[in-house]
Image (cartoon, rainbow, N blue to C red; front, side):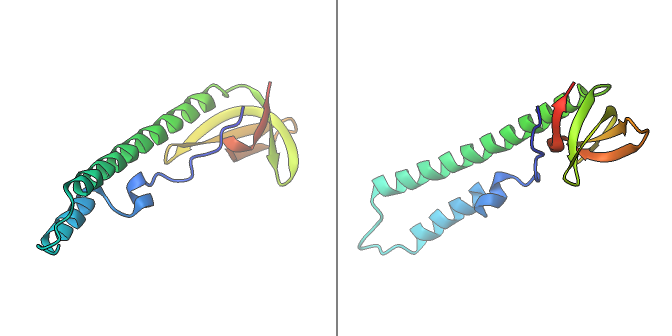
Length: 132
């Protein structure tokens, strides 16, 4: 079973562009410059705070899920040692035995010895099509 490689370790904060502290600063700025004759409705204010808290929880959950996927991918790749695999290389299917694994930024990369004695390093885990 092939698992696509994690394509980066950027946290969810980068995806939204703001962290929780920045969002709180926005609310404080909004409160500071609001029209005193037309103050923000309490319901709106509490609703915004709840949305920001939910965003922070979503970011934390996303970071945890990313770590879990990396750990699972690492565990699966270690189980490949000594196994015969088929993988795609330059639009061709290649077969060989996994002889080593390297990890770069938590992403596994396999070393495979083919039937003709060639050693191929840097085989992406996601290119594996069959394990025997």
